[in-house]
Image (cartoon, rainbow, N blue to C red; front, side, top):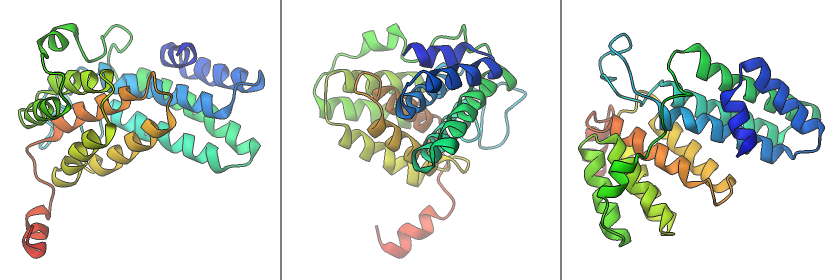
Length: 237
C-alpha cells in the first residue's frame, strides 16, 4: 500500500526512481508490479469523468469508459506487469521501472486533480446499501449499471466483496456487459485486465479492481457493441 501511494503521488521521474530503488533493495518484482497496478486503479476510482472539452459521441460528459485516463493507465500497467513476469531479469526490472513512470505520467500529464479527488465508493452510497444477500446485491448492481449510476454500482460491488461473497457471479455479470456494450474499444480489454489483476493482487486490495470495472461498466452501458444484434440473431440467442 505504501509503495502504491508513493508511485501514485510522485512525478514520473520520482516514481521510476522509487520502483528502481525498491527492486534494488530486494522487493519482489511481483510486489512492485502490484503497487503499480493499484496506483493505476486509483485513477479509475478517483476520476471525475470527461469534461465538456473531452466529450465526443459515445463518450458523454462524466463518462470514464474507453480511452479515459484510468482505463488507459490500468491497461498499460497490466501490460508492463505481464511483460515483467515473462522477461529476463534485466527486462523485468526495466518493464517495472517504465510501468511506474507511465502511471505517474498518466496522473500528471492528462489533466485532473487526482491527488485531491476522493476515490469511489463514497460513504453516502455505501450507507444506502441495506442488502447483504449476494443475489440481492447482484440485482442492485445490475440495476445501477443499467441506470448508468457509476458511484452506486461501485458501492454495491465494494459491499459485495467486503462481505466475502464469491467473485465469479460478479465477474460473470460484468463480462456480459463487456461483450454486449460498446466500450469504445476498451470494454473486453479492461475486463481482461481486471480479471488478471484480481487474481494477482492480495486479498486486502483485489476488490478495488472489480469496483473500478463496475464503474466503467456503468459508464459504458446503453451503447450496444457493433455487430452484437447481428451476432445474436445468427446464433439465435
